Image (cartoon, rainbow, N blue to C red):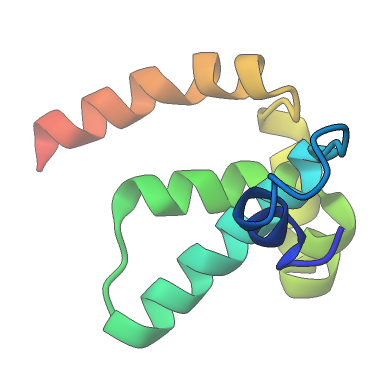
Amino acid sequence: MKINEAGNFFKHGDRDPKECLEFNPKQTEFYIFIAIQQYEAATQDQIFLFGIYKAWFLIKNPKLISQIMPELEAIAKQHFSANPQEFWKQILPLILYLEEQI
């Protein structure tokens, strides 16, 4: 799917009522990752929960983590699940604890 495809689909939806937009969750996850990267680069601000999302995304996409930070690949695979529900089940208690410490 092209980046503008969804926007054009909704903008011009009245032209072909039988047209269907295919949703790709993996693509959305990637766009969120890129948006976080761009936000941090633009603002020089690092938000804790953004870091958690980036960690999950990289664990779920080991080819990217091996390119960006190869030393973390083995640690990430050993300690966290790539399954979204399991990852958040593992990480949320840590997040809550760390937020109480701040």
